[in-house]
Image (cartoon, rainbow, N blue to C red):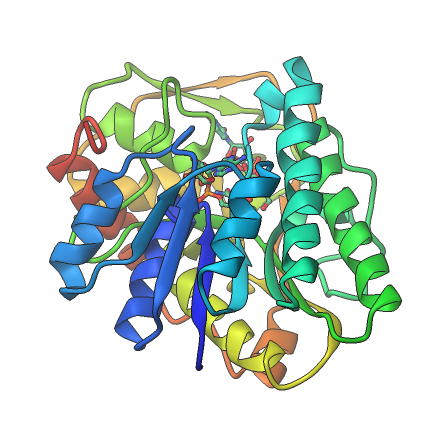
Length: 339
Ligand code: NAD
Ligand code: UFG
């Protein structure tokens, strides 16, 4: 591709793995990140891994002037838009911050893109937009549901505003990628997920328990209508996810309009299956206790990933054991994340 790829949120968990995959595929990358939930160290490690450095701009996607300068001084051909806040519980307590950062941020970014006539956009959406589907696996043509929290609603709002945008101006080419549950780390153990403070998601919590940073895992409910009573999710390796973005990018530069793809594996695992798989690869016992359900959680959620395979020529390649061993390598090499 002739121009550079702008990666918003490129220092974060999924953005850093995608930035590495882009550099390794020969793209020139500019990372724009305000580092509110990440460390510049992830970019230094990317450089060590691939010998190439992404350009880095420390800034906020809500900063109009900075964005106009950025687009004016670089030939940017597409934007991969990861920047946003993602903690479900925090979004309930700070809804304005979440809508401002995620929705206003996306609007400001799209306005700057339109002013610069850059119309290729890949957006990080989430399976959360499906709400509580009545049928599994989930296909892209299932109706969107009613997300149970401001974070989920912000993702759905952005999807809808991007659909409206593509209808209003035919030059836009937009991919809405609905991620299922991203987990894992680069196989080198050098980049991975480094949550600030107390982890909210299952795997960061399990791996903290494994290294002794946290005492025991709370399993949120064992009375769901699933085979062992615990929640089922479609866990996808972050490297597979990163590769999916490159295929999506290649697709959108060849066509116009907006399209949606699930990025998942098509297989669901229960919380207890995850604990067992992690114990096997780490050789550590994960103490856990069953507690009440977490409000807003659904029983099960997994993707039908056929559309991405058919249209993007992309399929998740890495299995559960590889996901678990890559998290374990990352976590044991970096018990305090990037600190
Ligand atoms: P992350 O927090 O690791 O990465 C997000 C990055 O965006 C961080 O580096 C943060 O500093 C940056 N950022 C946040 N607000 C910004 C702003 N206003 N301006 C500039 N930079 C800003 O999260 P992640 O897990 O890598 O998620 C990336 C994207 O994928 C997010 O949009 C998230 O909602 C979406 N997503 C994540 C998951 C998941 O489980 N990790 C699932 C579905 C969708
Ligand atoms: N769980 C526990 N204990 C924990 C954490 C989680 O039992 O300490 C359980 C949950 O109840 C659920 C499963 O583990 O059954 C996975 O929970 P996560 O918090 O890891 O992930 P979610 O499926 O709740 O949500 C994630 C992201 C959302 C995103 C969604 C769909 O956090 O942002 O996947 O992509 F919207």
